Image (tube, rainbow, N blue to C red; front, side, top):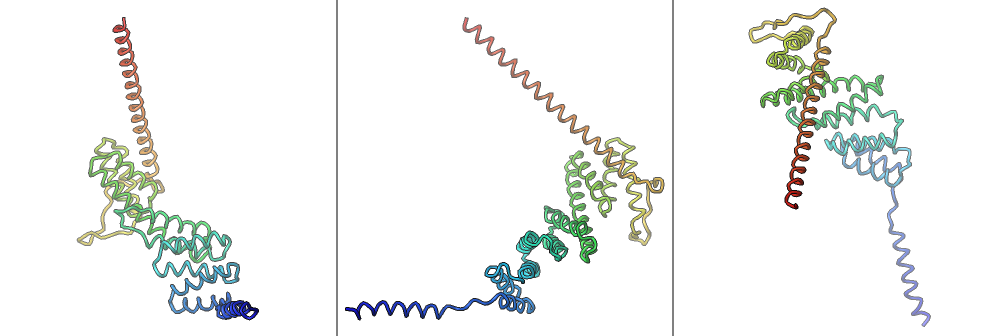
Length: 306
């Protein structure tokens, strides 16, 4: 009886021991790091990310963690996985808010957005996000080597955003929504005055203001456009002649654009006020009519009750 009892116990113990012996030993943090770096150097970014992730999962406080997280983020960027890249760079900044690599992180987070930039006839939200990130580089890290690179990308973003505004303004103008077109054009010249779209926007504004019989504002638009054409690099026309500036230039150092923007915003505010006043008047009139109808109905009901 004793033998029969011991046999299954001994068998179970041997089975457990054999199972323990067959368990594979987990690589060390250094081994994970070495394997990941080898894959990274060979351009196997998927393999590198997998090993860097394993390193962070099993050894979150290891001395290689910061570099591993950074290389995960950049690997996603290299592989054109831009949504994952943005998320990984954001995770890095939250985990290491004082890292010396933050200029790199901000710049390539901006690049991850910029690579997703759409044509100017589409929504420009990713362009705005890219602009925000590149601006963070120049504002927070002006001495870093990434600052001049970010400045160039900022110009690309601003040109795209301005061109989009001009396209929308032309769309409104094509449907005779003059107020919306003027508002868009005013926003363009106010927010993106240095862009290539501004002279065209000023030309459109001049035409709209002439049609609206506002010659003084039209003249300001013409002068502001002349200032920009005079300071822009000359471009030859089809027969090889540089274009002439048709409008009189203002006094040196004077830019009429600011005055034009101020006056246009005042007019927009006046229009909004008139619209609000009209809506309020209509609402008040409708309430009065409703009260009168209610009173008339009550009087009728009283008469019928008698």
